[in-house]
Image (cartoon, rainbow, N blue to C red):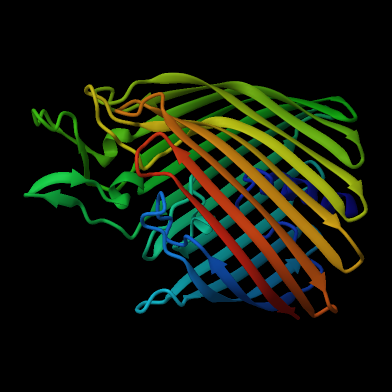
Length: 427
C-alpha cells in the first residue's frame, strides 16, 4: 500500500504544476490533521489602482490581515484537503471604502484505487479584487466581488507495464462585478468587464504515455477547449460611423483543438524536464467578426534541486488567451491574444532558518484581429521574498514585487512597485 500512496503524491505534483501562478494546496504539510495560521503585513504600494503613465497612479501605505484554516485527512489510499483563506487589506489613501476583502477556498481529493488506477480532483474558489488571485493574464485591478472558480479532474490508468492513459477535465468560471456599459449621448461607447470577460472555459484532456526508458516517458495527446462568453451584453459596433451592427459577448465564443506530442525525462533524481510541442486550431462560432486560425502550442518546463533546501524551476508556454481588448476595425474584432510566457522560480535555504524565494515572469502577447491586430502587450513581473523561521510557530518575512506593462495601446501601460514586511503565526 505504501507504493499506492507514493503514486498519489506524483499525480498531485503533476496537477499542481499545470498552472505556475495558481495558489492551492500543493506543498502543504499533509501530516497534520488541521492547522491555523494568521499573517499581518504592513505594505507600501505605489500604484495599487494600476493607473497608467503617471497620470492616474494612486499610492498608499496600508496593512494586510490574512488568517487561514486548513484540514487534512490522509488515509491509506485517499487524501482529502480543505483550506479557507481570508485577506483584508486596508489602504490609508482611500477616505471611504478603505478595505478590500477576498476569500479563497481550496479543495483537494486524491484516491488510488490500485497501484495502476488513480483519480485526482482540485477546486479553487476565489472572490477578490486583486489580479494575483483572479489569475487572468495581464493584471489589472477590478473593484467589487469578482468570482473565479477553477476545477480540475484527472484520471490516470496504467494499461500495461509501458502504456499509460490520462483523461481529464478542467473548468474555469469567471464573473466580474462590473456590468455598467458606458454610453455618451445615448450611444454605445465602452463595454463593461463583465460583458468582455464573463465566461465559462471547458477543457477536455486526453493523452497516451509510453514508458520508453526508466527515466523517459513519451506522450501524444489531444485537448478540446470550449469557451462560452456569458456576459450577455453589447461589446462593440462593427463600424461606429455606419452603425452596421452590434457585436455581443457571445460573438467571441470559440472551440479550440490542441494536438501535441512530448516527452518527460528525469536526468537525475533531482533534475527533470518536460516538453510538449504541437499546434492549436481556434474555431470561432461567429466568423463574421472573427477569423479562425492555427497557432503553435508549446509547453516546456524543467526543475532542478541543486542543494538541500535549494530548487529552481523554469518554463515556457505559448498558447492563446482571452483579452479585455475588443477594438473593432475593418469588420472584425479582437477575439483573443496569442501569448508567449517565460517564467522562473528559485527557492534557496540561506541558513537553517532563512529561506529566500525569487520569481520572474515575462509575457509577450499579440492581439488577434481588430484595430490592434498584430500589436500587443509586453508584461514583466519579478519578486523576492525572505522568510525567517523564529520558532516552529512564528516566522517573519519581507519582500518586494515589481510589475511593468508596455502596451501598443495608448493609455494602457503602467508600472507598479510593492514592498512589505510581516509576521506569521502558525499552529
